[in-house]
Every structure is written in C-alpha cells, then in structure tokens.
View 1 (cartoon, rainbow, N blue to C red):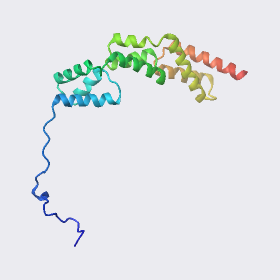
View 2: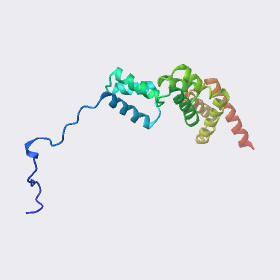
View 3: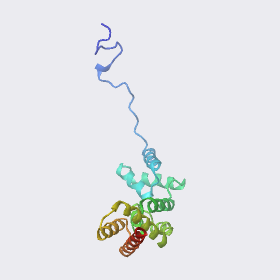
View 4: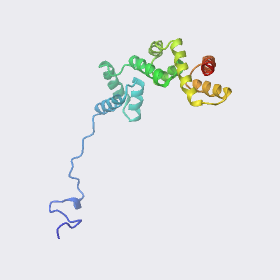
Length: 186
C-alpha cells in the first residue's frame, strides 16, 4: 500500500520524543545587543537614546548596552548630530513641520539641545514661512468652494498641528486667501 498517510519510515524516531536537533547555546549578550542595534540601524538612523531604549525593552543589561553603544559610537554608526540634521531637513521638507515641532521631536528622541539647535539653524524664519505658504496653497485646492471663515479655520488649524505659531499661521492664511481671490478675479 504505497502512499499511505501516517506510515512510519524505519529510521523515524518521532515516537521516542527525543529531539534530534542539538540545542543552541545561549547567545552572547554583547552579540545579541549588537544584532538588535544593527537591525534597527538598517531600517533608519537612530539616536543613542532610541537604541538604549530598544535594548532595555529587549532585556539587555545596562552595562552591556553601554558597552555596545560606546563601540557603535566609536565606529560612527551612532551620530546624534548627523541624525538631527537629516531628521530636520526631512521632516521640514516632506512633512512641513515647523522649527518648534521639530525641536520637540528631537528632544523626544534624545538629541542633545546643542545638536538640535545646530540642526534647527538650517530652518530660518523665511524658510519656515515659505513652507507654511506651500502647505496652505496645497490645502486650499482641496477646500474648493468653502466659505472664507471655514477656510481660515481649517488652514490655521492645519498649520497649528504642524507646530506653526498662531500669528504666522493666521498671517500666511490671510495673505494666501487674498492672493487667491485676486488670481480668481483676474
């Protein structure tokens, strides 16, 4: 009866309950911490604090984590200042976040105030206002025929959620609505 299900091969020891695989020796905690950090750094750059928090969540002892993080810092895989520069540029250009919102994010990620200030210096007041104008123009297309008070409320709210100051947000929205009305009139 060839092809019968459940038939046992002559050398099959599955009924004995013994596992034929050799058990893995416990992994070296330093190597385990390195693996965790490198896996996280492969996805995106991380700050030293982010990596330390991830190692703590995985149950890595503090002294092992400190040793691994120090080594990664020595070889240049952890650089909070470079992380802050890239983060600010990316989040300002693609998400439209203001300096204030970016500063809060960097603080949450554990970037030192000095490094954060240097990175935030790349976003001056003019660049921040121009980005706010771009966001308002883009959003105005979606609002269509809504009345002016509704547009103002929605546009100022959008800028506020991105961290823009109330005065700047209101001024930019009013200017852009005025410009839009002039363009429509021509």
